[in-house]
Length: 274
Image (cartoon, rainbow, N blue to C red; front, side, top):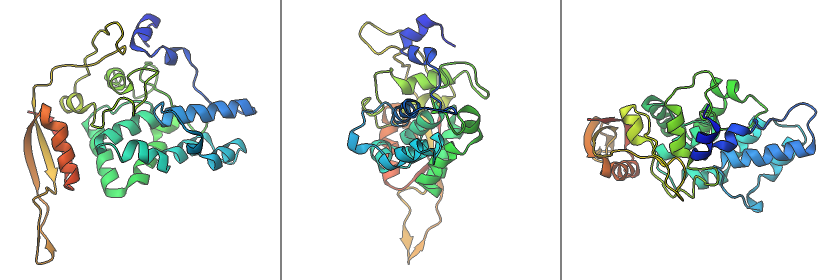
């Protein structure tokens, strides 16, 4: 757990001092309203919520005790609102980074986690990708049915935690008053670090900047392994067997190339530093 001075510097002090938001037995109406607001804040990445965007029916079911907090989290993550904010505008890997952040309270630890969820999303669809977090053993152990997910890797106190998680999550977090959409970056944030299995460097914050600004050298070349490249063609109505190909791409062209491949229907199965 970071000390209070460091927590304040990184902008994570609210998570050092706050208790998890849980709907305990014999809850009051104030309790359930606090859970509803905390759930929106967490799952929507601290996004401002219009009154017309609220899930009125699901809120009512939670207030009546018909559904659990986990069910309410699921309803938000499966909603058209979540898709519009985080699926449609973003590259797929960025969408997966945000799913980890919003639903498990952490960042992806390594390339295998990103590759697994990318394949799951492409092969089985949006609903299966979302459910994979909510039905996981990790979610059960961390939040169960009645606790709103929160950022866990700012504190060193949960099973399965990895040391790299703090800097990974800080890279996605960007301050308590910030929101995921306000960051203005639609490409994945962790490509370079995850590909090389490195923690993100944490630079000292300058006055007036967001605490915990992150960075590091970005001069490397990456090898992309691709299945189903844009060159695949149909011959006499039969689909040519998809082959695995490799590309070498400089870092400064990486996100652009990933977006091009996604639009072309290609699937990137790995990104590794050369």
